[in-house]
Picture 1 (cartoon, rainbow, N blue to C red):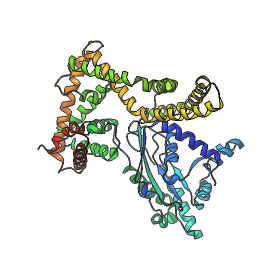
Picture 2: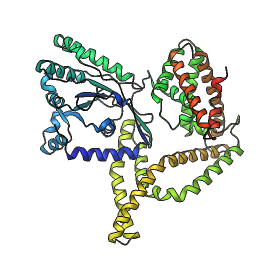
Picture 3: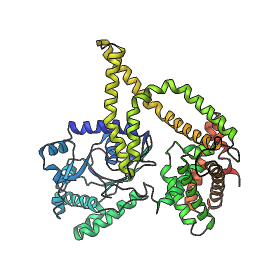
Picture 4: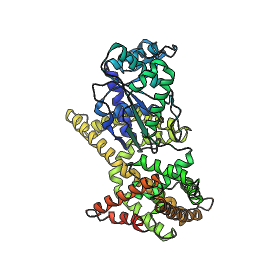
Length: 500
């Protein structure tokens, strides 16, 4: 089934929308993707609705195009059928129980050596772990293996497990990770499938689920995930804007604390304390970095005021450079803000923000171009090209500088909140006392976390994995500090690793 122009248009729009919303989409272990000539079935996680297939299609290695399943009822209308076929969407007849008929269109695609992407969880969700897997992916893979065996075809279609992880999936300029696992061969399951199809499909589904579980973050409950996230922030202070090793570090912290909490009451108390710290930060609308900035035992009025003045002056100095981009994109930011606060489900919130981006960004850039062409260059022929070049530079500059400035803007807002509470003394629920208590709680959590790592680094495999990452980071920072003296302050925050 060939792909047409509609597929390219959808990918172009999706690419621009994702580029606008996410600051980084990181691909890991792409060497596991089968070669271009081999058919295969992608089995991916489904935590973010239409964003998941968009990320897969736009970022898939070697620009490999992917087919997706859709109910055959969607193909009944001629215009919809033409569009879906042009996009490479494969119809699935859900009314039949015959696997050969159910996935007949899928088999045609695989015979052409192409790839089909499926979401075994069935529906998008917001859970701290994988949702229940359905057997459709396995039945399709095994039924196609049966056809290959009976017809003497050359290539089986393995299942390629893919984990799509979002550290903050509904946050603007957040990051995403796409991690590829080793392909799962279906041939070992074929003899059992010929005798007992359902049993073989169940076994293959279990193998697929286990493979994807290794590529993602899975916690028994949200509190376990929250505690691990805060532990990671505290242990790796320079990782606040990095997603390197996010999956293994976070999963190791989840496993370690949940296991050790059952036998060590101190670990159980630490886990609860980390959750309290996170909730307090959210209620006060502050970030850990804003609390960690202060070296004093208490956050004082003097330090808060000086820090605020410094941050404000820096922002004012940069204002002329960022104001044009801010004003041009203001409708987009306002639409995204309201899309976030009025939507309950996080995955829907992310989808709406990206949808507004797709809808508004072309309009904003078109209006900006027309304005520049006629107002600045008088609608002349030469002005057309100058306006186009100027718009390109404007967009490039805005996108490449927005992450740093957006982080500084959020940090400045946090500094104003600290100033408002500590110096002006305004706000309900004694915010000043809560903030000062938060600083103390942070230091207590950090001390107890470091003690946990030192105590169990040789006794628990997950703690040892975290310890190994810490040592690796210290080595990297020591090397960097030779060329970047500013890194010396960061190195000092890891000195505890050598104090036993």
